[in-house]
Length: 280
Image (cartoon, rainbow, N blue to C red; front, side, top):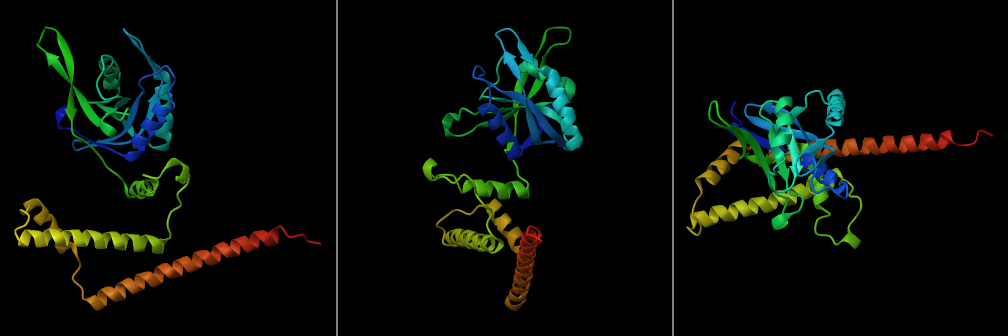
């Protein structure tokens, strides 16, 4: 498959590891590189993990600890056997002269490696994310070269990652002296309440859009209309009484699980205190 037909999907844990490696870099290092791990399926490169590779860049050469990279990859394979080398990453907002040399090494480790650049300098007020593939150029029997060509890249999340990001967002915009060092997960009922309020706000936004379209205050969008139609068709057909009965049953089950967990927790704490009581 041609490298230009690839699409890169990056998970948030990869971005966190890149930023962490950049913050822990040596004082004389201006750029950090590393290996991307993940899988390739039907033209989609899904990057789920990564690690940093110590290196030094000089004017005419690049020194990288490849043995360290191989050992770390072997250790990761014992824990995550489904993660393979899919490319490499580097901090910065552009491809440098040494990138082709590093890319040649990863071209021997996997087919069509992708190069991911993460702009940790936050130019433009955001962390830029770009993905490239290396395309060979030249004529038969003559000089050859390569060119880094951009390919689509997007950030994707598993459900646990989405939940973790929502917790992290609670500390955004808070001044450092008042910023909490830890954020505890909310109780189940609090999550239901917050999700219900958010759902109500989204429904009000959709209703306002539909009313504006009907009143010719806003031009209609066919893509939005198809998504709304799919959303309506996905809602189960049930009466208000059936929905209320189903919701109440789920709430009762949730309250029963919470009560049992609290009883078990209390019993364990009581058992621990009785164990340490003196036997005299």
